[in-house]
Length: 479
Image (cartoon, rainbow, N blue to C red; front, side, top):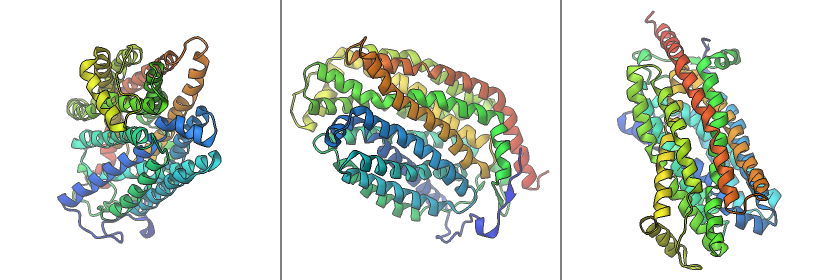
């Protein structure tokens, strides 16, 4: 394990850092809350576009697959940008980086709403993606420093849950607010980004490693990442497995952004208009992803099992991911019928969809399968978040997170982009909406190698956790 390099005075992140030096429990709680909410807004921006593929493609005179390419490209650009943001955050003051990144994605989101043609829409979305890269990677390193390892899984579950909630909110906002005017949700979200920037200003400027038990009582922690640390980071065995699981997991997760399209096509196949079908698809996709709230259970289970064995977090994630696959298959193939007033207002359609959960058995079965599937796979996020922090010293965490997220972005972009091609290829053998169901089912098989990668991480993580513990003890002068 590399030792990092001591920070220079200009690269130090301190409790003063140019901002009000407080840091009491209330201030820490506020800071965690802001980062959790902002992680949610990050994913609202990501979730806005998929339910509006149809209206955007019509308005900009391009095929739906071209709009799908924008989403895929945004995932990839955000992941690449996150590496640079995270490396800078591991070396310098993180708060200004977060504020700048938030302003960039707010500007790109506003530009998306004003775009008059496809090239401008693509450019605006890519600008927003650059800013979004800062929120996840730099914010992650800050949150891990705010929380002690004992509760890391629980807090990371809220971090991961906020991202899932953000995706749901984006899906719902896109489908409902954008059903009549697709530009409206982009403009509203850009205003939220400006409010978020102001909220960042008052967060606690915590120093790296401040919540590590090994460093309790240490006057300061002056180590910062350097380029010489990078080979050691990549060579750390648990990091390798955490990176590899993201490639296949995000291929599967990336395909799920097409859920609104699947359900909208089911509604259209029943004879509903495009506008009503978009609302129906968005509401169903939102309902069926509510199982993500069970990530809290996954985080708690990971914390509890980790106290019994250092393999705990990785084992919880492995079991959850593998057990979810059959439930996804049920979700995609159970036939659903809905009874909503075609052409009615969004509120009326939403009410009818919610009522169908109780009145239509196939909808109820689909919802149950979705809750279980999403609940099981949601054990992934809090435990790999926590594992990154467990097996890496504080000055490496943001960069490692960004490297994992880069591979995640490649997998998610591939899942989101290629699945559109798969749907088109399957159309010759399976008419819509069956081609969407078959394509999504095939993509979920990528969860199998994901589960196996987590199992391998459970074998290597005890050694890597012990090495970090020994290193921090040495730096704190306890050895």
